[in-house]
Amino acid sequence: MGYYKIAVVGAGYVGLVSACGFAELGHSVVCVDKDGERVSKLKDGILPIYEPGLEDLLRRKLSDGSLRFSDDLKEASEWAQVIFICVGTPPREDGSADLSQVEEVARGIASVINDYKLIVEKSTVPVKTAQWIKRTIELYGGKGKDYDVASNPEFLREGSALYDFFNPDRIVIGVESERAESILRDVYSKLSAPILVTDINTAEIIKHASNSFLAMKISFINMIADLCEVVGADVKKVAKGMGLDKRIGEAFLNAGIGYGGSCFPKDLKAFIRIAEEHNVDFSLLKEVERINESRVKRFLRKIKSVMWVLKDKEFAIWGLSFKPNTDDIREAPSLKIAPLLLAEGVSLRLYDPKAMDNFRRVFPPSDRVRYFDDPYSALRGAHALVILTEWDEFKRVELSKVKELLLTPIVFDGRNVYDPEEVRAVGLEYYPVGRGSLSR
Ligand code: NAD
Image (cartoon, rainbow, N blue to C red; front, side, top):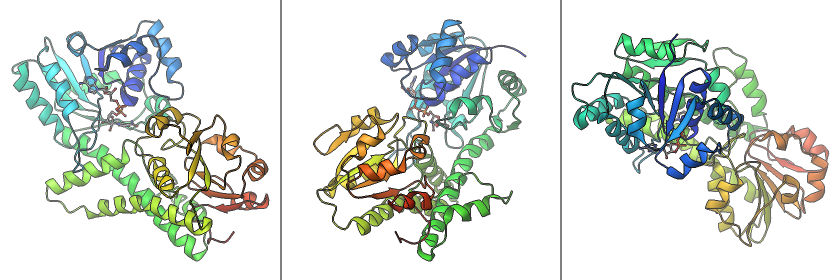
């Protein structure tokens, strides 16, 4: 195998994990970000995000010299043989992907192509983006230069991103030349995952199709949960019974208050737009989105139906991140539920193991928004506990203590963390999602 000089552009969740991962695989890596403050902290080994295991790896790679950070895209691009684009592709107002960060990077690279470069899109992008990257490179100084553009979509999950980097289910490589294919095979040669080589358009679609499919599974099971709630069945057992069928699989069949995060909502929207732009009627995905958007309202209706009057009540909220093991709150249900409860006159007592700093920036502490350092303190005197993220820490709490600390012993569990019988056995009223009727 060959070792490469790799530039990773964008020091966010994907860029940082990839940069540290490539360095660990033996490559020499520079990670570039235009945010100078972020870069200077990273040079000191300080991570701007929380991701299990990443800080350790970052420090090891900084100290063995295989990884460095820079805010100079041009210098990094001149130096590197392979350039991975890992910048953000946020949604625009109409749902389509905003590709301005990708274009900016392509322009930056174009002017400094000296010898052969392999430019790889790792950001999640709409089909045909590689063609636009090539056109941009041609327009901004790359015409006649020796380079390839390839697609290598990223499938890591926040919270287990490092594990996913080193143990992917598959590596998808979309290429137009044997040279590009052989370099990317080499870059990943130490990983044992199957490598699927396709044309570039296909690779781009694989990423959007995968995320849309997973989102569809979640919306599907959430509708089953609604039915279970009405007829008195248990969605967890239904999901188990379905998931044991190998054709279905158990993953992504957890009913709750819906998916969030920086990927599913935005990627689904972008894929819907792509289908529309190409006159393909993919209304199935619109329904997936509609179901997801209705989850929070339904959860709130449930809370109101149990609590009767919300005004001047205090609620403890456990879990602010969009899923466990991350500090990421982008598109988290907590961001929708907190303002709705505040508008009803509820005061919030908040706890999350990692996401409180990010949440504080959106909801600064006040008389009605208070933050606590441990889950139990958040409960003291509250009229109800509302669970929005299934952190392991919540699974391990002493339920009798929860009962003792709450003013009124009511638990709304948006993530089905507990066994209903165990919770009810300690005298708590328990309202999970899709597990029997609303009986107490
Ligand atoms: P992020 O917002 O955490 O990070 C993006 C970084 O790019 C930021 O630090 C930003 O400062 C930097 N950046 C923007 N423009 C730049 C430029 N011109 N030059 C240098 N740096 C620049 O984003 P993320 O969550 O890491 O996601 C990146 C891409 O990967 C997105 O397309 C996303 O959809 C995709 N993706 C994300 C995940 C995930 O779990 N977060 C998983 C798979 C794929």
